Amino acid sequence: MSLVIPTAGVDVGPTYALMINSDLNLLDAHDHTPGKGAQITPAGFNINTDLSFNNYSATTLAGLVLSAQLSAPSTVGTIYQIGPELYFADGVGNQVQITQNGGVAGAPGSISNLVPPASASYVAISSTFAWKSTASLAANMDFGAAVMRNISPNSTFALTLQPPPGLATNYTITLPTLPVSTKIVQMTSAGVLSPILDVDNVTIEISSNNLQVKDGGITAPKLAPDSVILSKVEGSVRQIQKQIFNSSGTFTTPATSSTSTVYKVTCVGPGGGGARWTQMAGGGGAGATSIAYVTGLAPNTVCGVVVGTGGPGGAANTNPGAQGSGATEFVVGVTTYCNAQPGEGGTGNGTLAQGGAGGDPTVGTGDIKAGGGDGDAPNSAGSGNSQYGNGGNSSFGGGGRGACVNAGRSGGSAGRAPGAGGGGGSAAAGGAGANGIAIIEWVL
Image 1 (cartoon, rainbow, N blue to C red):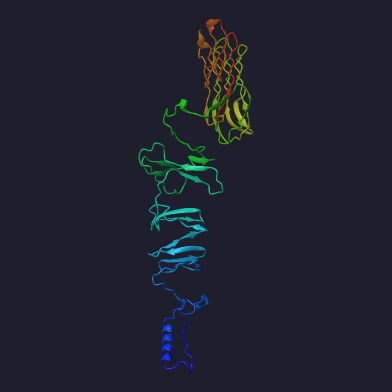
Image 2 (cartoon, one colour; image 1 turned 30 degrees about the vertical axis):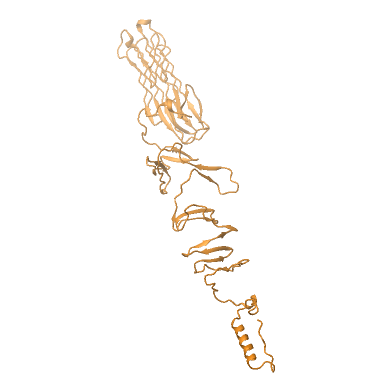
């Protein structure tokens, strides 16, 4: 500090005093600046409270080293560190994050007019961008098509959600609230989506991601007459399948069927033969008809079909016609689902004739049963056709015609339709009854 040190015993009087005064002035000016005291080393500082720069800047700093804080400071205008990230408390107390994960957290000015309370941020835990107009209110977004990908590395394909081309006006699509059950949704012309129809699994169901009518779900007429034009039906239309048995055999349920497939089985018993007599010969009766609706058969089930054969007509004079041979029936295992009885043969003699009775429906089996037509029985001798009865009609058509006296005393004709009776004969045999028939129908 260049202090003037008096020499004892040498400097006396006024000189000594002047030297002391000079030294005191130097001590008063002591502020550790160059020439005014020794420089203070870093070890000489012990700052234990805020250090004010009296509104002056700290200049020529080589760097600023911060200590991580546990919470944000209350003083505005503070740059501080929490964990590894840098923050700034702005002039109104907003805690602005400056860095995030080794980068800048939101470069200022990258989004126009993005000023508090609006914000744009990224939530790393849920991989979500959050856009807000206030701290508690989401912001609207105005952009082009939305391209959405799976949240997975290197996702190749994307779903693009975009407005329709040629959009000529603004409109809004409003999504419905979540329904309590699975429903079909409709959209109004105002763009409002609403669930209107239950997928109740009784009438309609969803099976293998297909909406379909449930088996047995339609229990009453649902389509107005002529509402479906066949030429407009595309794809594999379900067709009525049919198999006809004119003689006994087996029926195997299709491999593509199911236990819910309904089989309509129609059985017609065989007709009886007409009698032969030179006068008064009766016609044979027709076989009965039974219809059964069969369900519960598994695919590839083998079913027995028995078709009765028509009874022969009376061959010699005084011979009655024979009853049809056996019933026509549909059998699975030990269960007979459908049975139609045969018609009886006609009788006759010189004074009395009887037509054969039609097959008896009370003995048969089925959901719908009807008796066969009785053979004709002329009630008096005389000339003409009236002496020889016609065979009874079945559900499929007319019986055989009786003999005609004026045509050379001919025989009766055979039944003309499945299950019909034969006509009565005169000089020749009575007509034979027609064989029965079995028809099986189903839809696939």
